[in-house]
Length: 232
Image 1 (cartoon, rainbow, N blue to C red):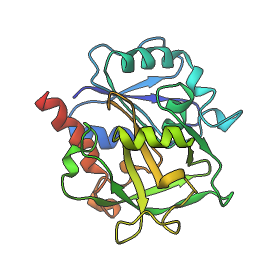
Image 2: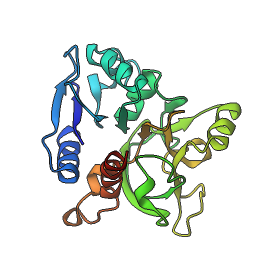
Image 3: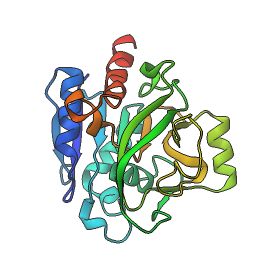
C-alpha cells in the first residue's frame, strides 16, 4: 500500500500517522506539504492527521480545507481513492465536503483527552473489516471541537446506509451518555462516505497502534487497509 500524509501548519499527529502506516505497510510514507499542488503518483491512501491546522482559526479545519493540496485530495477521493481523516483531519474532510455533518464544540466546553471505548458499528469498509467479531475497542481522544452534529434526516440516512463506522460506548458496548466524551449526536465517533472509501473519525487509532503505547486496537485499522488493498 502506497500512502501519504498531508501536513498543515499546526499538524501535530503527522509523524504518529507516518509511524503507524509504515509499520502496517512496511513501506516509506510520503509527507506532503499543504502548499503542494499535486499528490505523489500511484497512491492508494491519503491520510489527514490530527492537530490544530492554522491554529483552528475561523472554524476547525476551515482554512486547511482550502489549501492547494486539498484540490488534489478531493479529486483523489472522487476517483475512488482511500482517504482517512483523524480528529482535525475529520474536521478538514467535513469542511472540504467529502463527509457530511458538522463538528462542534464539546458539550462540556472543555478539551477532552483520554481513552474511550468504541463500538465498531460496521465491518463493511476497507478501514474496519479486519476487526471481525471484535466489536468494542479502546482508542484515545484529544479534542475540543469533536461533537458530531447532524439533522434527523442525515442521521437516519447514515444509519440506513450503514455508514456509522464507530460509536462511543461503555464497557458493555452500550452507547450511553456517560460514554460520550463530547455530546456527539447518536454517540457517533466516525462516519463513512457513500462509497465507503473515505473515513473521518475523532478518536486517534495511530496513538494506540503498538503494545508499547499501552494497546494496539488502533493498529487493526491500518492492517485492515493493507488487507483490503491486497485482496482488491
